[in-house]
Length: 128
Image (tube, rainbow, N blue to C red; front, side, top):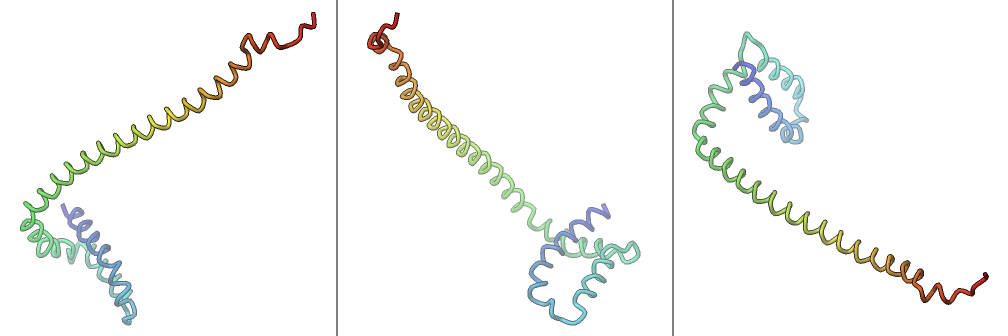
């Protein structure tokens, strides 16, 4: 549980760090403070990640639990519909490509077969 709390808080830290690096990285000792913060999160003596998780993350998740569940259900339904849509579209494209290839190759095959017809063979002089 302790590691779960750490990784959740650390992931949130990494997500916010992307933006804060752009905005406030010019402050003196910014990177040193950031490293000290990560050590504070990780330390078993301070239990910083556990403190932040219990004070901020868990209450927020508990408050928004129904919204998160609704979002997950809606996303699952949409992903299923999207997979069906793209699957049908892919099969249609493959079928169209197969029909076009067959049509083009049929013309080439018919041209080859015409060259071996009996009429063509009769026009060749008999060298016998």
